Image (cartoon, rainbow, N blue to C red; front, side):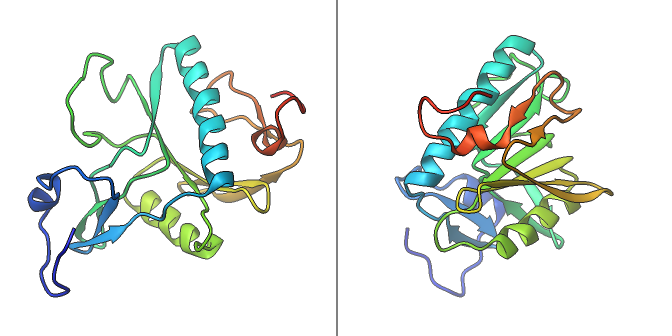
Length: 190
C-alpha cells in the first residue's frame, strides 16, 4: 500500500481500500501498519479467542472476533483501530447482523496484546484513547510480563498476574485465571 506522506485519507477512503495481506489502522488520516505478531502474541491471542468464544457460545449474549476494525473518534479525528480481539454484546449488535464491514457499534471490550517492538506505555495510551472514545473496557495483555491490565472508564486500571482471576461484570460467569493464558499445553486449568 503506497501513500505519500502528505496525503490524508478520509474515513470513506480508508474503508474503500482493497483488502490486502498487510493490516493497517487509520490514525490521524494516515495508514499505520499493524505490528506483525510473533509466536507468544499469536499463541496468547488464540488462547484468549478460544476461551472467550466458548464463553460467548455458552452464554449466547455476545460475540468475540479477532482483528475486527472499529470506527471511532480520537482527538476529533476518525480513528479505525484493529484490536487483537473485540467483544460486543447482542444488546449492542444483533446476532443477525452480517455485513462485511467494521464494527458498526461501540464494543464493550477491546483486547490489545503487546507485540515485540511495542511498549506497555504505547498500549496504555491507546487504552486511554479507547476509553475516551467510550469503549467500556480495555485489556492490555503482556505475554512477556504474563499480566493482564484492565482499564475501566472512570475507575482507573488494575494489573492481574499469576493465579489472579479475571472476572468482569461485562462477562458474567467468566472466571479466567491469568496464568492459564500463558501456560504451556497440559499445564493448569482456567
